[in-house]
Amino acid sequence: MNAAPAIMDFPDRLSPMVVKELRQGLRTRLFGGVLLTLHMMLVLLTLMSGGAENAAVVSGWFDGIATLVLCIIMPLRGFSAVADELKSGTLDMLALTRLSAGRIIFGKWAAIASQSLLLMLSIMPYVVARFVFGGLDLFGEITALFYKWLIGVVIAAVIVALSTQRQFWLRAVVVFLPLMMGGCGAASFIMVSRMGGGMPPGTVFTVFTKSGGGSSTLLMGVGMAAWAIFFFLSLAATRIAPAASLLSVIKRSVNLVMLLSLLLLGWLTGSGADMSMMAAGVLSLLMMDALTERVNDVPSVYAAFYQRGWPGRVALWLLAPGWVTGLVYTALLVALVTVYVGWTRSVEEAKLVAVRAAGTWMIAALVQLFSTRKSRDLLPPFIIFWLFVNVVVATLGSLLLMPLAMRSNSAWFTCALPQLLPAGYAMAQPGDKAAFLDLGMLTACIWPAVLLIAAVFAWRHARGARQEGWRMIHGDQGGAAL
Image 1 (cartoon, rainbow, N blue to C red):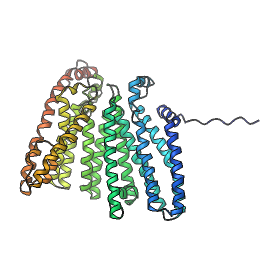
Image 2: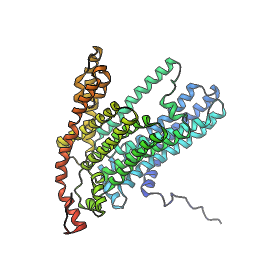
Image 3: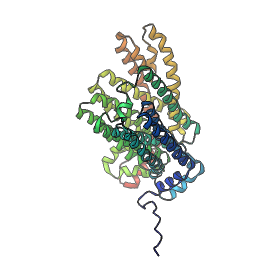
Image 4: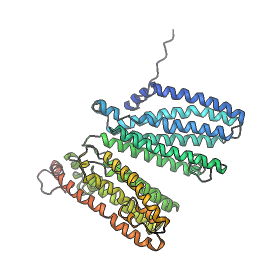
């Protein structure tokens, strides 16, 4: 009698955190309900495609359902992925298993990405069936489906990073406000496209989901998505990592290499103007990350730098955990991007990049000026101040800007706030633009100066930890910590 076949389980090479989250995720009613509902609707749409010969309306419904599942429903499964662990106290038990913070966060994200991949693969037979009916670009549809999955796993990384915040209302605002704005924008786009007789050429959907850019666009998209996933997962891991962790060294090094790669790619391919704008957008994310780390007071963290001699002491100013070194790190990044934008585009746009960076320094300075500087995690107050300044204050400022623009007057009051200056500069009179931008640059410099003063006091406060770290390496052999 033959022995019963062995039940195949996940291989031991997989992280136990990934296996745990994947098992739990596949057993939930939500995943089963989404899978069943998705296939019922796709079967109906596939039959409709055969009768209508892949009409545009049916194809639109097919793409919409796939986008809804892969880019919204599945990523939202990570909404409370880490918050539930923090509230129930099970995160400390996971730490006892010698799983690092990075592996815990990666396991949460990888389980969502794997389930999304399973759904994407289950959709592909329907794409092939629609191709059989004719009038369909099979490679283009498969590429578009891959891009939907890729965008979905990036969104999942963002939501997992936000799930490290205990405040439910803060997570809800940050997640659902863009969804509402995006839904309104998508509805308006559909109405305009139908009134205009179709989708306008050159849209983001056409470029990034229909493989119009060829292999270079695909590689660029995959590369940027991989970095975005690393960035947000490392941002989340920093929030739950122990104080003695040196995660900031890896994180800031990778981010610096990525930014330099963007600038170098723009120079080698002759697309420096486009890459400079992309680098300016990436810069704001890097600044938010570096300026929301708490100043570290664990001596062993500084000892790891001191034991490497003078290169380690130099690296300490850029890579050591804490927003104080983050200020030096972001100043270097801003200088690199500003010079590059001025070289590839114009001096005026380089000044605007510096002003936008000053706006981020302004938010960090507000966090340090109020009692929020004592928070265990600086990211929630940073997000709250950012939402208040950029949504409330900037919206009110824009309302005041419109009457002046209608009377052809320059809105000089926008020079007082870095977030308002780009809009005010765009509507300023041609003869006032130079003076307008110079005044805005002058007022914007106030905020990094304020943050620098706060950084000096914070750095002096951590001097005892640095001295103890120095003695751990050098004993009483003279010299002193910085």
